[in-house]
Length: 145
Ligand SMILES: [Zn+2]
Ligand SMILES: [Zn+2]
Image (cartoon, rainbow, N blue to C red; front, top):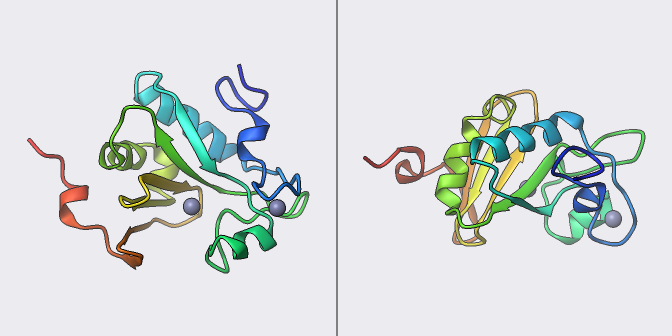
């Protein structure tokens, strides 16, 4: 039982630099609950949630990253996630089926083995391959029969 939602806790979304920043958009948490449910209750690990601007810069995040959170000013709207026992490609495809992520941002990081989801206002898709941001290759988009 989490203290943010049934399966997620505040500490999972807190900035990893130790500053204590934790102000998360509730739509992000609701979307992650929906994703978890869609995966049959498979646990989702949050690798990075809220980031203060300094930590975001330190980890090489985009200047306008959806992870950036400033308490009581701007909630964090992004999470980098893994699901136990699920490939990054399957997690990417599942994330795109959650309405709030489908209309927001979903990125796949095959090398780092995580998926980024966010609740921005317009759809965005990308992949990070060999250290570069590129369009999502077809083999990740398409379900294999
Ligand atoms: Zn911080
Ligand atoms: Zn991210």
